[in-house]
Length: 422
Ligand code: HEC
Ligand code: HEC
Ligand code: HEC
Image (cartoon, rainbow, N blue to C red; front, top):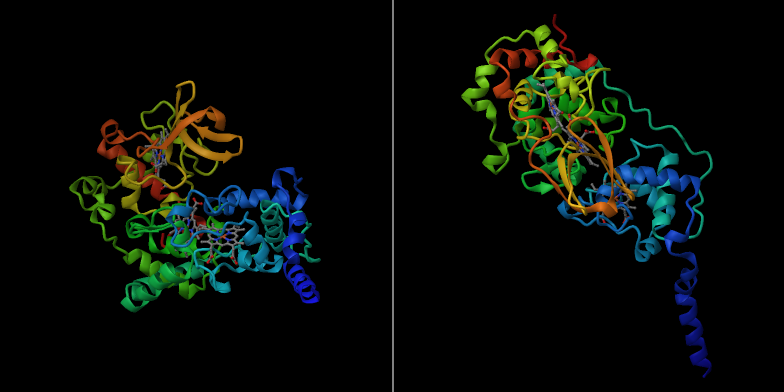
């Protein structure tokens, strides 16, 4: 009997965390969000939900494309086995540094310490954790001051790339970084593998000038402060190797990689010298056939249906720009897919999804009108393969008009990356 008691006692002490746990959790609908958790929520929806799901269930839209399942943050089992410090560490340094999957990106070079702690607090909220997260004192509230790349760095890169950028050893190093070490495939597709948060990188060599890949991956926030791509703290050497790999990459599936560039048709336009002044007029003329500015912002003027084109001459090759004008549906810029919604009262709504929250979808239609479609009004929705950008400019505009618009787009450069000659 006494032994039995001892055993009981032992079992009880051993399992007591489990008993105690019950009171640590509650259904998270009943918990009020603290100020820090509110901040964490916004960050979570922007940077984490595509993989981990809006409620941390491990079921974001991107999860199915990953070789490793994103952690189910809201589960009690997960909450039990991880400390706040460890949560901070994995968000700060990424999966690879803590012997977890390299597909979990690091956010420590993108977000401030305070923001990462607010994410820790929000992850606890998602698990229904009632205990307040104790945040260390003296947190840095500033985002890391990543040194912006300089013109000298870029010029150095360009010289380096022409001399050594196609060396096969280096390309192998880049390949291993992209595929096995860094989190690129968490968000990007190569061949059929990888996530869908960012653009498909199969055609990098056709789409992007090498210097652009290098500067973008070195510090994406310089160009788009709010981009979902984190600053991944790549060393210049890593960024060079990755660029070489992406530029040289050829997808297994020919169809994916087929470039219009080879076709006679593209050459028809590329061989003409365009007049950028005339191109600008066509681009901006509100009465004209093209009226590109209706949908595209350049510097301070223009609409917001399509992507901002302020430095498109730096970030895209001439061939890609031409392809975008004459065949916009061939590559749809990430984040600008057209979706078609069928509402419960049988209305069709077509447009680009600009945001989503618990209440519904925010859509902008081809005329720039913004709409909110409540979730409970939606019967079905489907991503379309056709761009919202008109596909018939090739027929509406003359060869010279298109060459002129192309010449204008090429003048839209990022100041640091403007050609150093002339
Ligand atoms: C590209 C997809 C992706 C994004 C974006 C992402 N994660 Fe993850 N995350 C993963 C994957 C995959 C794992 C699983 C790692 C493993 O178990 O090896 C993971 C694991 C985790 C873990 C558990 C680590 C552990 O020790 O078990 C935490 C915590 C986490 N992520 C938080 C976040 C937060 C917070 C964000 C946003 C700031 C975020 N993740 C963004 C893919 C992602
Ligand atoms: C957490 C997701 C995520 C990770 C991880 C990530 N990216 Fe991205 N990437 C994006 C998104 C989203 C964009 C689209 C940029 C935008 O519009 O803000 C992008 C854009 C790009 C672009 C095109 C830039 C342009 O001009 O539009 C390249 C090239 C790129 N990423 C390469 C990489 C490489 C290489 C890695 C790994 C070292 C990587 N990315 C890791 C999300 C990610
Ligand atoms: C009705 C709105 C609309 C008009 C008009 C329009 N576009 Fe677009 N454009 C878009 C949308 C939406 C996208 C993104 C989807 C895609 O890639 O096709 C886009 C994409 C682009 C891209 C690719 C950008 C990138 O980041 O890769 C370029 C370049 C472009 N447009 C140039 C033009 C030019 C030049 C004109 C005028 C001849 C024009 N557009 C007219 C809506 C428009």
